[in-house]
Length: 284
Image (cartoon, rainbow, N blue to C red):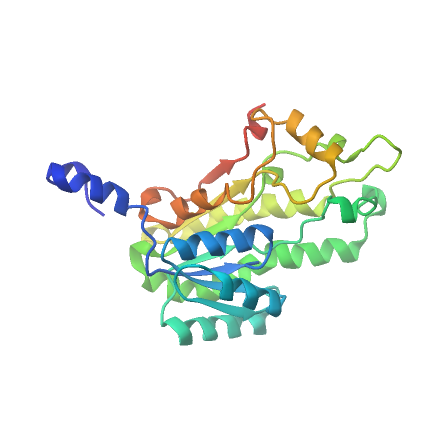
């Protein structure tokens, strides 16, 4: 990196814009076929990056990769909580592109509260199944550990450009407001313990890796999104909006700019940090 103010005046504008540049970078994105994953894939491709769209649903990953509007994308079917799949993911990525500049640990199990799942997620804490706990730990926390470990040799080769972004959640910072999931007609849902626990763990992993690898030029940060509109029932949307200073849920494209910032040289002096994009949810 360089000090922009040391450049001639006519070059400072171009230089300032270039720090957000991710053109040509190879970015591995887990959970790449999900609601936000597909939006991230689209935006990063438009920005000129080569995106490796990783998802347990291989057909969905292929559709997302085929539909990106910019640079070449690669679809890889993988269960990122399963070490042999992670090893294969590394092989396929490096065979296709020869390098890896960034890893976005985005894959997660997040219980749905949209109209189609209105009657789900009603187990009280004292009856929450151990099997559900173990599955969420595997996907939400063990998978980022495995992927970070497996890609680390390639990210360190990237030098100053090597970076990891772990996608956390506001529920990694504050407890769920369970009142959101009570629709008032006796059908009370809950946000289960697995989501805030694993997202808190992701923030801990972020800080650990940032401190461990900082001297080697690798940066590790967490993106902390709030809620995003995704077919929720109207009452939930209203309750969420009333709880949020900006008075609404996010559109699914409103996190992509923050992700690009964390992946680019614009955040070159950030590591171990949480970038909170939540409409003010955690401000009060």
